[in-house]
Every structure is written in structure tokens, then in C-alpha cells.
Length: 544
View 1: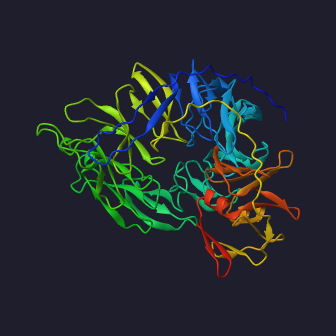
View 2: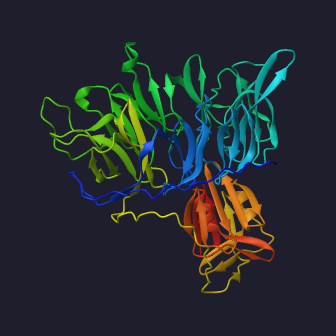
View 3: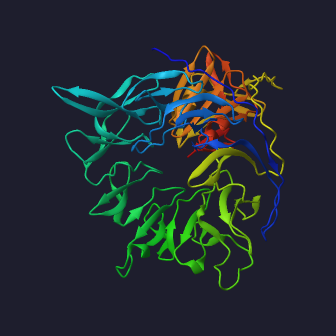
């Protein structure tokens, strides 16, 4: 396959500004620090994903790393598509970008991996990417169709759909050429699992086992068999997150739309947060909290609720004078919790609105600053920030450290290859059992124990967890992808990389009896599973 190697350039060293920690909350104080790694200079940015962030300069997109170095120069075209995926980010090691009017895929060095031949492309998800090809239909017509390719660019599911969404939890929504505006769900072989219907929504992926559907203008949820689990009674719904879906009911008195009632339901359809006209909107739960926007000025702007619907943040603040609303977050200046922190815009008594990062206890981890016009949600320890106004806004990044220790100045140094020496030699442990979601695994190479850790054959454990496995013999590296999680691990190394973040293992991956063995706990927990150990029966239990 032809490869286009893009030129790489490193940015000059960037000025770092360290802001001392402070706290203005009435709650317990905390200290923290942030470093302005990338001064605001870009026209637009996307959040970091797998160690890189897309940035726009002079109308073109490129990618920078967490030191601010330009790893992939800004040469890609600025075009947002109407697809339901999120462009300009790396996913499963590749990014969909547009060059000379066509879409293709590049790796993290900027090398062309899949040629620029597509009319449109969505990012890889669960090992496949939805892409759109153009076809000439004699004598004059030119039509486009969607299909799916793998990471080699090979066609896996034929180009026969008018629309296609990314795979989520093993299924993807598609629309057929011959049934306009009707959608179905297919699996990774292209088999129709849930038949074509006008009720299926093109942009609603499965999340936590359920997907939204619409009938007669109302929304409900179906499971992966197409069975109606929650009847369509809602004016609007947001996909399930952390066991809850945000729902909207119409006003009880049939009045204007702004009096719609927002609440939350569980997977049985129980209203765990009663729909109330008090909220202008409720956003999805993240790390146990959901942002709410209040409808009435006397309630303030925005706040955070827990899963019982109780307002938990802000709390403990002195009230403002009677002619002002209670102290709260700006309605349009509060984001979701990520990595334990949320960016909010708020006004201390007698002061001006400014930006802070709060933790889940309400402490101002990063103090109020009016230096930035906005702050975005943290991703991989980095948060996008902007300066200027609507007519002229530029973006950069700050590195967040919420532990109380100032973030060290990042330098673009290569990651060393560790060569750990085990304190004890590995021993065969054929009496150890591994059970994944109730199913006992069988291995052609028995597990081993080393330094108190159990290692098992990698392919068996990855496939039991539903991950797609890839082995690179030249680098002795294994990669596994499941959903939004990508992990890589090199034989002999005790560094596991999860979505671009290094995790140090107690023992390295190693080859025993011609099989590659990996630490079972670290692998399972990287995919979000719970791991238990029964010393009496010598059983590892993995549940999701």
C-alpha cells in the first residue's frame, strides 16, 4: 500500500506559567497547580485523545503532543461533516483526516495508512471504520454509499448503505439504499440483527446495552434484540450513562416548550429523578454527577446533582444579597466531571465571573482566574482554554495537577524501555482457575505466578473480554481494542499503554512455552472489569 510520509516539525519551547494554588470555597481547602503548556494561539482545538490533540492554524488541522510540540503539521482541510462520529481525534491508533478533498487515515507519525480515496470517513471504533465511497452511475449520476473497512483498508462490510454510524457495543445503525429513512442495526459481519424500521434513530448508538428509538414522535429504549424495554413516552432522551438516562416530558399543562420537565430514569424505566419544570436542562451523568441548568433566575444559573437528584454542588456558600440570585455556577459555564474535576464559571460575592476547577467535594482546586474566556473538560490531564471574545478567540492547553504537587515542566523526551528484573522466578500454576463472566477459561499454556501476580495467555484473556487482538512480531508488541479502550504491551516491558497513558506493571509481559503471558489483573482492569481472587480455591474471577 502506498504510504505518504508527512513531514514532522517540533515547536519551539513554550513559555510555561505556573499559577500558585488557592481556594475560595467555604468547603475544605485543597492545593493544586496548572501549567500553561500551550499558550492560546490556535483558531480551534479538540480534546486530547491517545496522547495527541487536533489543533487548527490558518484554517488547517494538525496534531500536537502534551508538550505542545507539533507532531503532525497543520495541512488537513477544515471540514466538519454531518456524520455522528467525532472527527479530528485519534481512535485505536488512527485518525480520519481530509486532504485534497478526500478522506483517509493517518497514524501518530502522520504516515498515510489508508489512502485518501473516501468522500467521508468516521473514526475507527471496535476495529472497524464507516467510510463513504463515490460511484459513477451511467450516464450522468454520481452517488455515494457507506460501508466498513478494517485497519488495513480492506472492505469488511459492502458499500450498500445511504448512512452508517460507528460500531458501539458490537452493533452499528445503517440505512439501506432501497428503504429511505428506515434504519437497522448490523453486526460486524454485516448481518442485520435488528430489522429495518422507521422507529430506529440513525444517530443513537447502543450505550450500556440500550439504544433510543422513536415512534409517533416519542422516545423510548430498545435492547440488542430490538425488544422494547422502555416505552416511547418522552419528548426527548439522552443515551444511558452510569446506569441513568436523562429524559424530558412535555409540560403537564400543555404550555410552551420551555416548561418541559427534565428528569432521569434507570434501565427498568423507573423515574429515579422525578421530571421537574425547575430544570431548563439536565446533562448526562459523569463520575456520579450531572450538571443542571435552572429555568428560573431565583434558582441561580447551574449546579450539579447526584444520582438521587439532590443538589450537591455548589454548597456551603454565603448567599448573595436579596436582589441577586444565590451564588451558583454560570448557566453556560459549567462542564461535566472528568478525571475528578469539572470546569465551572462562577461569581464570588461582590466579584466578577471567573473560571475555576472544582473537585467532587466542591473545593476550588484551581483558583478563580479571569485570564481565560473559557475552560473545557479535562482529557488525559489536559484542558483546552481560550482567550478573547466571540469575534476573536484563540485556544491553547493547560496541564492540570490536582494532587497538590506543581506539575513539572514537560519535555519531549522519549519513553525509556524498562528492563525489570523479577525478584522471584516465575512458577507454573496449573491449579489456578480463571473465570470470566461466569465462564471458566481453558489454556494450552497454564498460568504462572510471579512476585504475587498471575499471568495468563494473552489471546485467551483478551478474547474472553471481547477485545480485538493484534500482534506485531517485529516489535514484539500486542495491541487490543474494545470499544473506546486501546491498550498496547511489549514483551519484556512492564509498561502498559492505555489510550496513550503509561501504566507501570508489577511484572512484565513474557513468553513461556511459546505463548505470550500477561498480568491478568492489569489487563482486565484496563477494560473496566472487576477482578477478584479466592485464595482457598485459587480462582481469579473477572466480572463486568
